[in-house]
Image (cartoon, rainbow, N blue to C red; front, side, top):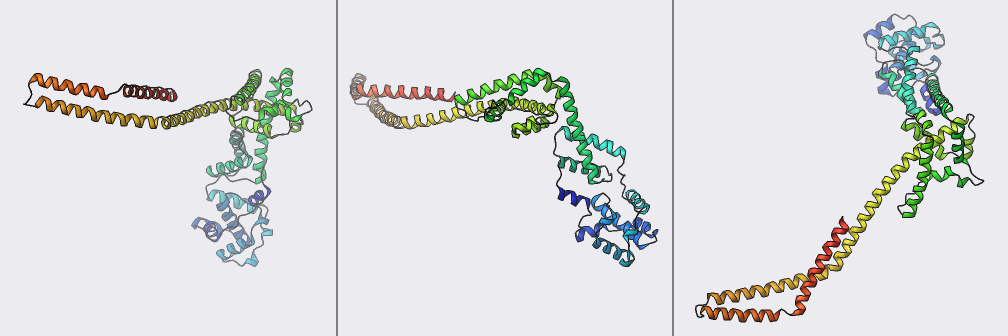
Length: 399
């Protein structure tokens, strides 16, 4: 609904700051000519006040609500004595004639029945979307201003919005009444069957979605989803007949989510309770599917985090072993380089015959082979197997 302080502010002329007041009361040649046609000080001040207020708010106000300070300001601008201004005599046809003239001067159209029909259609679109009343009210004001139409009274606008809301809901209830069978009603009533323990109603069980990704929790959620799915599929003809907008589904479902059991059972028209329950089932059907997608994503992320943790632990475990392997390979590489250097010296020696060079090389190779013990060979093989095993584990954890 609408807050009463906001309504009071809407129904009275605004309190204009100095700068804004100067702009609103500014008169061009056309306005001055119109004012010149008026005979009495009261009519002149009344015209200028209505003109200034309309420029500020795009609407007209009751004469008895005009602000005293604005009256005095207008009188000074028009160079008329304030004591000659009596707004109590500014009534009947004169203010209405002035309003028509002001609308023409500012290129605005009056709020008429045709405007009401057009605005009702625009409001209906917002009601279908289940926008909040205050949002619809502001939307209606913006539409009137954009189309240069006079803003009507608060009461007329609020009544129009309330009427559209009532018509929309009545149409829904009529549709529902035409398609809802006795079997459907009994099926929906099971949601409210408390068996003496309100916390154990099926409706209350369905209100909570467990966000845990533990296997038991997921299984429990799957069980509840199957219940929701059964309800949704059985009642789908009714849900399709209602054809609720996404916002309407959320609106009615949220109400059912927050409502007490007694509230759902005490509607003057029982169909209204069933409307909320159907929206709740539809919303839960969609919501729980989204929940399972979230569960999948969470499980994937959890597995990824676990794999990264295991990789990190594996890195820690094998770091020392890999360091030893690198040190050994470095040492072994150094020995081989020394061996190659010795062989190169022998091959380049001019003191040895070819046969002597071969003999000398064979002696070097035998000595090198003796240095490579069986234990060292086994260690190298162990390093190779360990590194190969680690790579296989990495592939498994990553993929």
